[in-house]
Length: 303
Ligand code: DHB
Ligand code: FE
Image (cartoon, rainbow, N blue to C red; front, side, top):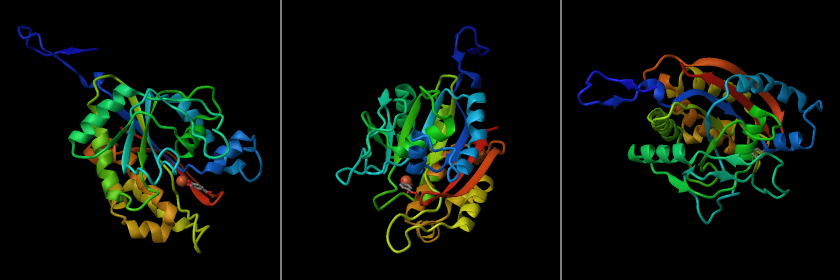
């Protein structure tokens, strides 16, 4: 579908917008490991879990109806692939495949994650040229931070629906990146995807959160008001969401609530923050409790 431009002598062939990759939607979801365990142990219809999985029924159908060609999945590693020996702030998985990690109970019985080395390398090149420092990862196991969102959105499947590019953000060991840094990085990733010369439909996912604290005297903290405000801002006023500072996350959303900065990467890749038409809210869901965590979820369609 190449479009010839009017200069037959030079025989220049210019790529039209239809030939380029696009960001078709962004997906936001928590990644609680107990959700993966509930699925893997056949407990999803138990009274504790049933209301949570019900909130993802729409999303699973939407995924089937809007199958992407690739998913750029922003998540955090929980000292699984990385440790205190090496802590990249932003790491992009450029490998052809990523094994589900053994987090202490054996790997989850979920499909292998196949990457998209060509698109990942393009994004790495483009984003680094846009002045963001990324760590290139060519071998990495992926933990619940990545596999639980895939399970929630795709269900129990023999193969994930498309290639997945893992993008790991350090939100575990201080210092962690600010929400605004993540939002700006998301803009750069959006530009990178849109400059890939293949007509791919790419979804970008931001995962982790919502409010939760797993440690210290405030362990168990959930803040429904903060979560609702964050979702409102994320959807309608992402620039204000990006201005939430580090201490506010820790104070209001708990020490592990800082995982929410990853949602701003996905939000930053949407066209509306770059002068395009407004994003369309397709689905919004919130549920407490899931283990120690408030679960939030939204789908935004790019227009
Ligand atoms: C829980 C939540 C997390 O985000 C995580 O990484 C580990 C545990 C929890 O709610 O138990
Ligand atoms: Fe986590």
